[in-house]
Length: 370
Image (cartoon, rainbow, N blue to C red):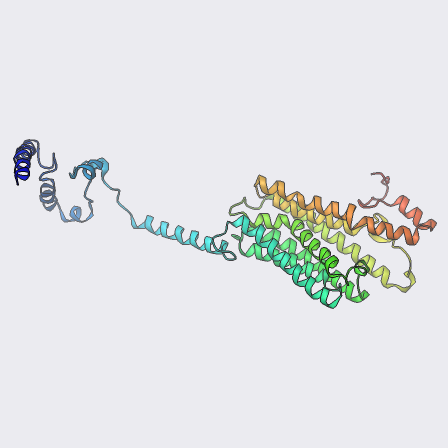
């Protein structure tokens, strides 16, 4: 009781002094009477100002408990038109985010595109290997390879913002895959099999290596598509995209023509046991591979037009990998060895091999070394 009485005796003069200063310097100067003064003033103003003008506050009023009427700290009026714009922008951002997270919720878009494509690719190869190893057949090898190309490309596109370049590059990959896949699947069922797998298709472990190597080939080859589909923003289509599209189209036509000419040549009974040296095969010993390399150069070019340095650098891996694979590993070396074993003793084949470039076509009048 003594402590409370002493406190009251000290605080009372202080409060009376502050009330006196407030009376001298005006209401609200020291936190006393401000609310009442402002209420009276606001009531005397016209009705339109009473409805629309916000109550000004200062940063000091929050700290000291006062209500300073400084106009510098008054809240800005919020117009309904701006609110609508913000709401529209929020809805569009929400819709885009939902579309980009359609496959894996809350996953970063690039990781989702690359990682999702890899997992789906390998899952398809596993299913194909399991069924083919059980039946001891290789007839579904190219079918599952084509299915992996198209499934991964479409899935990465569906989880992307679906910009024009993303639609373009996805369409390029799917169109090439559909054409080549139909040709390879038809050929393997027509010929009754693929001799490359005769020694391994009855050994599940070794057979699996071929299947998962195909999965790696699919992922690296289609890498430009997955990279572009992993971009949240990119530049608009421009002349460089259309030039690369023309390169891609040239490659598709060149490869398709070479495949058709070889199919027609082998279908003729008069050519049984002979090597092909007509049409595009007269200017290149492997024109179909040249066309395939041109296809992926075009796809890589579209990816490099996206104005992303990282995507541009990574996309180069696709045509480099395809070129290395076809010229050094599974394409040309195997076919050249087989051709030498079959026709190496024939003078006509020796002349053909001497005068015809291995890969890059030689136009009429050009020397072989060019």
